[in-house]
Amino acid sequence: MINDELESKLQEFTLWALTIGRYSESTVKRSVRRIRELSKKINVMNPSQKEILSFFAKMRERGTKPHTLNNMRKDLNAWFRFLNIKIELPKYKEPPSPDPWIPTDEEVLRILKASEFGEKGIALRNKLITELLFFTGIRIGELIKINLEDLREDGIKIRSEKGEAERFIGLPQEMINDFQKYIQYYRYPSDTTALFTTKNGRISYQYVRNILKRIGNRANVPRFHAHSARHWCATAFLKGFFGDSPMDIRMVQILLGHKSLKTTERYTHLTQGMVAEEVKKRLSKFFLNFKIINKKMNPLMHQVGLPGFEPGSQAPKARRIPSYPTAPAHTDEIIK
Image (cartoon, rainbow, N blue to C red):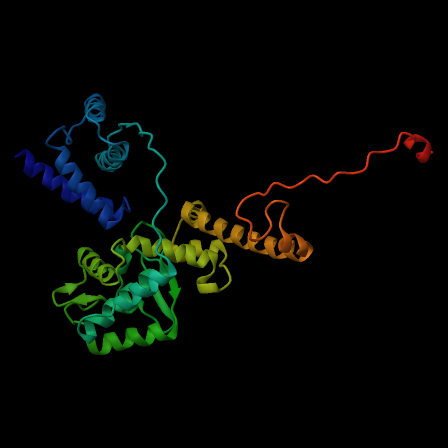
């Protein structure tokens, strides 16, 4: 009886979270799964703050990581908000998150090339999916929501999966031509509205993830995933797309669909690896120029070398200190 009541409530929660709560589909699925799991340990239908805090304290003692606890906290907060229950859960301090992995330009080119595999129609569909992820920075949840009517002659309309405003992204004519070719000759008519389809209907979240995993392995870039393409897109536009001039950060904000500019500013903090590589490149150039300039200014020094270190010498040589004549006793008179 309790399970039936919980499942019924979870269905209501799903509808509420997607509409009123404005959570993404992937977030809602995770929250439902988490609440179902937590229902075996705590009373999620009629919770008390004391019980919830005691449960979190025990999890912490058992070594559960702060990141995991904070994810539980987010899911429960959404659930409590739906139930209209006021329970405040503390946020656990997490260690600084590592720099996100961002593929290099060379890796991106390999991934794009590797996306074209299989039959012509499937290869074209997968190519367009990969290009959209890299060149527009959209999320998987946004990609699978694209409908036929969203494709225009100069771009594509994107519906946010996180309650952000809809946005329109311009596309080059080459991509528009590929989309038209895909729709006319290769798109499965298994769904009347969806742009990307399979034999069984609209393409799903997990289906896209599986495609990207295969593409990453084919390109020998196994770390590739959809959000890394979003990272690359943001940093590429901010620093200059393949050598092009940098784009204004406010334009990148609109492109990515961020509500706040602060969210976009995260991409201006380049990774430690990128900073280290740039410093190494600049310092190497400095030392090379320094040697060239120093050689022009002191040509004899480079030919002869410092005393005891002349070219061809294997070790410092003992040098005889030259003897100078002793100054005469009447030196002072001479000076005068």
